[in-house]
Image (cartoon, rainbow, N blue to C red; front, side):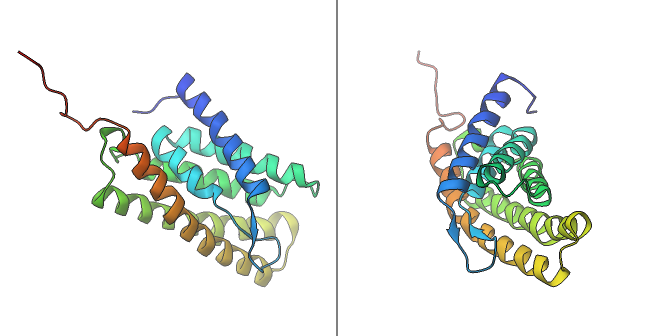
Length: 183
């Protein structure tokens, strides 16, 4: 069971910082207003899978808050909350993965990517547009197009970046039962 520990606090700080830097300085315009190709969601999915839902939630919340704040247009809370929900959902959905066991192939890759697709759809097709309408009185057709575009882009970016990070991380861990006692 993953706990709220010093490790979680450190992971949250690193996750939020990476999320901010990648979202602020590596964002690629998508052609849809206020919607970018965002590789930071692959990093957020990885942080969530390794350190759990609390680290994922806080990394997404803090990182996205500072991205919006740094642009000077104000904090767009609907999307900040959606990033936090994505991180938390990924942390819960990947709890049973054994990424620490040194293997991230087949079943774990499938679990990770099914989880990220579902989590992105919940965050960007349901939560962000609905909150945009409720909080900011945005037109539904505009925010649902943004949400669908964001979900699609984030799913693709997370499938590539997140999966590669998990594979690389697992490769650095010794496989279970790989050590044997010498006589």
